[in-house]
Image 1: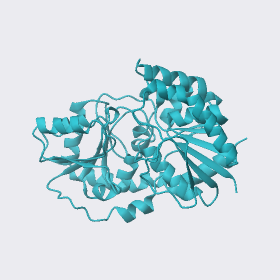
Image 2 (image 1 turned 90 degrees about the horizontal axis):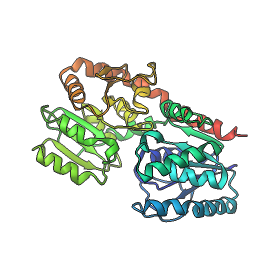
Image 3 (image 1 turned 180 degrees about the vertical axis):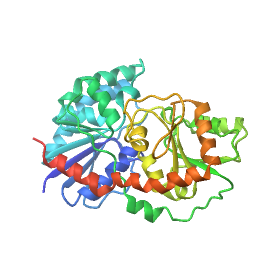
Image 4 (image 1 turned 120 degrees about the vertical axis):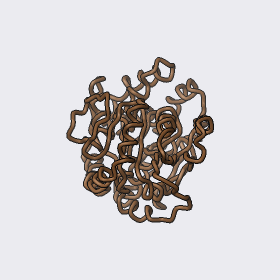
Length: 372
């Protein structure tokens, strides 16, 4: 049995962590897995036969320069852990773990977000990360983006050692969990969104968009913008219609009873929550951001297509990024058109089949087992 190390910052409630949790569950019978964390936050369940090692216990708000200066030291420590545990394959997720993995082993890295959108600012953080990505990623054994959009931008920037593996969806688990009872009263037509309360997710756009719609909005997730968003809700007199539900171990039970999923992000890698909404037979409205939403909702369209109005795509509605007027228009269309909602709900199951666990897990196994 080969020994596999998976390096990720923490095991908190994010999308990358969710994908790793599925990998652990389905690969731990084929590989002897060591999960290596840089922070001891654990949200998802870890199989008993997976060994857990702390590379460090990082402070999430640690100074950026200090983070940068620690990379060589952590790379050396990571290499020692791999040697001590006789690791055959080293796989990492997210940027800092990826830098450490490449420096330590030239291992396999998984890019979970479009890095040139995430770090396009001229801030020191943006400049440093763009430099590290450009300098290091081609030295990795393989770069695995989770969308063709991210791969396109990586290739365009000279990073060519890439192979797309999409996020996977545990449909059986969702089917079991989505029918759990919800201790929350649904008073009227309900929009729902899921994501960290950070600028990238652009949740404030939805709060503004719902102002003149007779409906309620449920927000699942947490983050440092929560207080600001709660103040916005209070200022707009929307306390009775906008509910902050925090992090949820089982978001599917809320998705299952809502009427429409709305996703206002400015940029992404491959938003798994869109697939989860489809798996709960929800109509989906999403910004046409880089990367992922177009690949999910309009898979046969041109990858680099740009829109300035709403697009009625095959599996959902796409809107221009950060456009309040068009998001509001799309939300009204879905609320007022029951036949359209039912049409999207009926075909959603066809799309999620493309991302079933067994199919994607086999892609991971074939990739890990067939590296030079």
